[in-house]
Figure 1 (cartoon, rainbow, N blue to C red):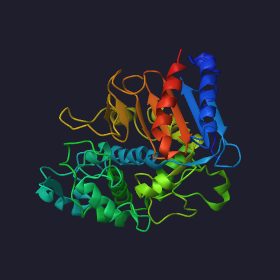
Figure 2 (cartoon, rainbow, N blue to C red):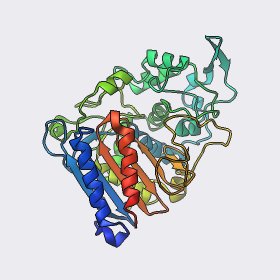
Figure 3 (tube, one colour):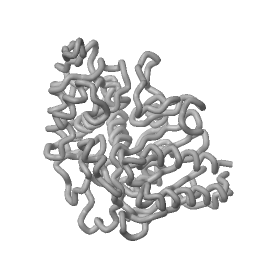
Length: 394
């Protein structure tokens, strides 16, 4: 079990209000009583110190109490990790974000864009190639099959391009046979882009994604419980939701593997713990370094955590909150207003389909992590957690 990366400080000494943190615990305990989630684990750091760490409820329905070392399915919180791995290759001169994806994956040179005309799907040629930057900021034109019912999304869902029965390479090959939903760069569309990025990382590194992440990130950062599976001896620590029905309906793998799975999903396959993800986010918050281990340079990290969307990019998507743009692996707050919660310009964040979430606020010298398994209430928990954490800042 990995340790939490940072030392502790009384909350009042780092500008947090103890009574309001107690309210955060009480409100989350009430959510558990109301059966909105079996249990919740939370952490807040300020000025590089852990000022709050609490767990409420149970590890799983009818199970033991939620523990500090619970293992959560983090789904799309895998994406920032894969994006960091890709930017390490950029720093090493092995990849450019302006590179066309087809440099590494030639099948992507022949993609077409699906255009709906009179109920029929026509195919239009690409106006420009998809780049690595497009993959990282979700402007590739790719989509997910579960995020809507447009013709290309229906084709994507039918093709099952996140199938647990195929390897990452095979799923990416399947993606390359489908039309795009948009021309590259023209719209923010949450998608399988990070799976394609992960495949590029595999090809450059010459190893499976899980091996690359273990060697480049999890090992050096001391993330001892983060992997694409939960070993049998750790199963007792795994947190579960009340139901997997939501995930089944979306066609998403339930991440129950107890050995390395066939498909290591760069877009959403990892399991992790509060302690491990704290180590990863502490590295991000620390400008790319933790405990003397430098993963990225501070300029690279700041570049990733900046808005990369053009003024002309269509940002009308339910998963990109108002007042936000998107960087290389994270959503980035661009306005003090417009968003559903208080916060500071320059915050960057992301979350996972089961409700896990994190954000880093450079302006407030703060980061916070929410670990929960409740797909039906994921948006509710994220907004609630943000409101309560922001209210505790003195």
